[in-house]
Image (cartoon, rainbow, N blue to C red; front, side, top):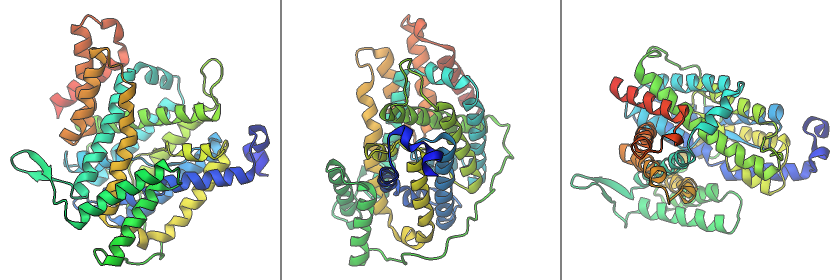
Length: 430
């Protein structure tokens, strides 16, 4: 039955291989069940940890099952890192949106993503975004996650003279944040599956045993998904809302395109003409998952590059993803454990994950100032303005102006110029 459903023999794999691959992928991304609720339920957002925890897990299960059964790709999905930080720190805290309005923006972005995924527009958009800007945006998201993690761990604190300063490096939160980062990096170097989740659990265990933090339990009843259908479209037609929805869409689209392209190369889904086999269904699965996640009460659900861990273990079909979905579903009963994890245990996860994003910088064309200058500007502005949207907007405005004044108008296309114009309108309106 499984062979017929997923085409195991045709793909040259077995049930055992797919199951082990699914376990590897799950271990590398299980941290999201703790980190995403922690970010979205930050004091002041109005969201509750338990409700977001349940929404996170169900969104991961639904999105991953769609990818498994519809697209037959060995890719797992969950609420995306970077997008959840943008949701909390930029949209709610920065712009003053309620979480209901922010969820509505995610839902709208998801609907537009679905439309783009089923039309030829998807290829045009992916190809029209300059490579340097794709890389710059990815690196900027990494920097944004890093400063959030450093702040949550107490490593970086407010300083009235210099805006930011070094925290108390002798305090337990800072020391344990550093320990967690070292553990994650070391385990990852040694190819230990689940390096991030193991680092979180080790730091948490130290905190619980030493009395720095308390363990509220391991397993228990599934928290009520109280944020289901909590969407507020009251500001749907305002310039600000459209700008926020566009930012969610842009980052999600870039992230998904990059992840699926990488996975396609690893699994041999790219033909001699450069076409990716089944990319249409994979994109649809990802975009539908975002809309479903918004309805459940979480930020954008997207494909995870951590799926590469399972692919390295031999995963080639949707059965790998199906195994991940089952394991995520089992996490629904671990809410007490997740809620007991202190902020300084998840902080190193954010910092370590940021290093993945920052690797994008090495592929920028450092011999062409018209390429690297706006890309770096976009990346640096994201953490300094505490907004992914502002970094994207100002980066593209700079890209178009620098290209035009440098006599490189041939490098410009309708896509990049449109993003720049939309960004200018956004700043004028907001």
